[in-house]
Length: 228
View (tube, rainbow, N blue to C red):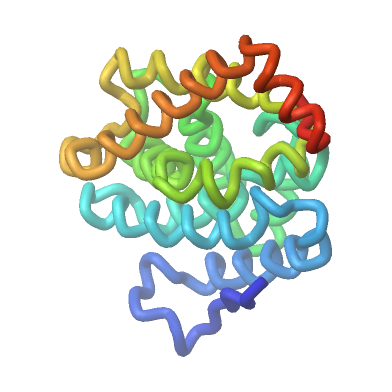
């Protein structure tokens, strides 16, 4: 995997977004991810870096706090370093440890914890802060990218030790209600630009789940050792 790099003070073009604390946090978490690279083909540093970059961009556009959004983005998926196929609660202690070491105070750590939890796909609602929405939109965008089902879905299956049925059920269970409630993306401009991708992705998974009811397709997949 190409090294996406770490920040240093000379690279920080915005002192609010890339404060020294964010730089220190990103460098420390990046090092942790590098040590676990082989076990995180989906939720690895490439995912974290993409989400952080887009979340900070969205935060700046919405007058949200870019420093808190950057920090929350960097630590939002640390749970996958703790336990496969887990939720944010699995990494609460690990997040706090990284944030405290980087210099965030108790109040900031609690706020970052709130941002991470309110942006979690499985539980988020229409009641969300500007910071949580920025992180959520960035993380959801990664899921909706047209290349995600082609290039990344099999990596998610491998990373979490699950089969096609479980992944398809998870995607439809979590994401379809968000489209129906019009909160798949929170920002209207982001929604207009990217929601068509999301709808195509969801429809693809609907078709995959329907196809798994066909015995001949199941036999075909079994012949090439695809976990169902």
